[in-house]
Amino acid sequence: MKSDSMRLDHKVILDIVEPGSRVLDLGCGDGSLLQLLVTEKNARAQGIEFADSQIYKCVARGVSVFHGDIDTGLSEYPDQSFDYIILNQSLQEVVKVDFVLNEALRVGQKVVVGFSNFAYYKARMDIFFKGKAPVTESLPNQWYATPNLHFLSIRDFEDYCAHKNVRILAKYYLGDDTIIHFLPNLRALNAIFVISK
Image 1 (tube, rainbow, N blue to C red):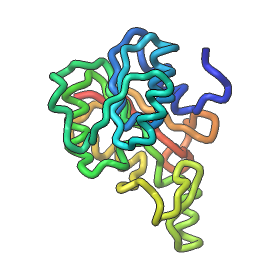
Image 2 (image 1 turned 60 degrees about the vertical axis):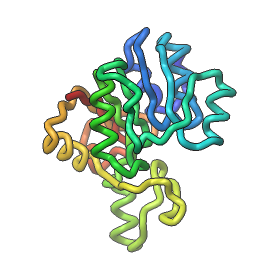
Image 3 (image 1 turned 90 degrees about the vertical axis):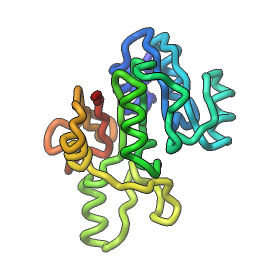
């Protein structure tokens, strides 16, 4: 059962994933989304995570997780071996974005990509008025402590998909606690895209 305290991005992804699906979560963090997918959608789900501290949390939640660096690829997985590959709040932390996305699109029938929108109006105001790297709800770290290597906007990701001939099957724009429909590149904190080859 979906809780009111559940993160909005997790609610959206939970709605996207079909019951009983095969799911691979790349950069699964503490396993909270994986646990939801297993319990709420009866998904056959596993994660890949690099940080040992997060792996311990996954194990404590009882979800299947493998230690790995997604920047090295997914060579151990055959083509189209998962219904969904999830990259939620992890794409901006990888070094080889193009390579990781291509591997995700190879291994999964659909790829769910969630990221913080760097073009959010409060981020723009921080840069324009303060002349400083932005700190927002979805970009909470100071520039020197952020795990993010890439800062992208909704429009950047749409342009990437058009340039690489990647199909956008669905897109969701997230505010603090609601879906954004008007001027998402300006008003959305986060975005979730469902893509395929």
